[in-house]
Image (cartoon, rainbow, N blue to C red; front, side, top):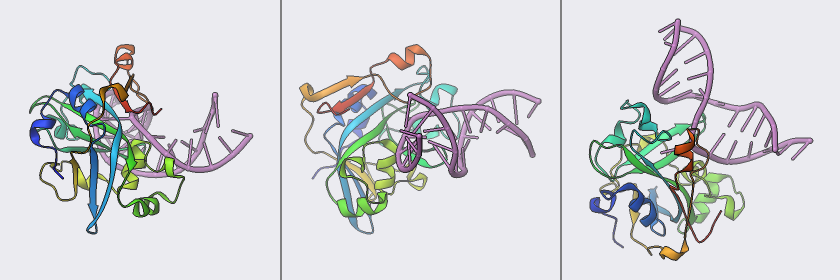
Length: 191
DNA sequence: TATACGATCACCT
DNA sequence: GGTGATCGTATAC
């Protein structure tokens, strides 16, 4: 099973967001594999994108986004949740793809424990939920997905372009221009 | 030092 | 459809 390489993440952000659909996100914990196919992503691109954390410039928090592609940008939100992003594009340009949803594959029972045994479809259908399910927190921030044994993305089945749905990003507070950008990608018409 | 708020979720009506 | 939980970060003082 081959892992996605630096070249993959070094593409422009919209291409990465699109091509991540159908790939397999893998978390190894206690030598056990937890994984799921990526079914929902959102792109956040550059300081000009008002919805992107880097729109207020380079800070300790956003530093990772300015670094090399292929690293994990994980932030803490609403005092209780974490969200997982993968850094894209080139060094010095802040951009990332938010992983918003996965379809559980391996280690489902472990995942159910982490999530407090909710309904199957509620396990990982949101950025905060999937981080809780895969035990992803800030200790993994900045991790190199091309090198790490703990967190990485494997090449699985690339999504058929016809199965990809494109919509505006959700949950963001920003100006109308940023809100309207069709930078959210879903697999198989999932909403 | 102080304060306001967010790329969310779960639970309520 | 509405709201409270809960705290790191950015920004203002």
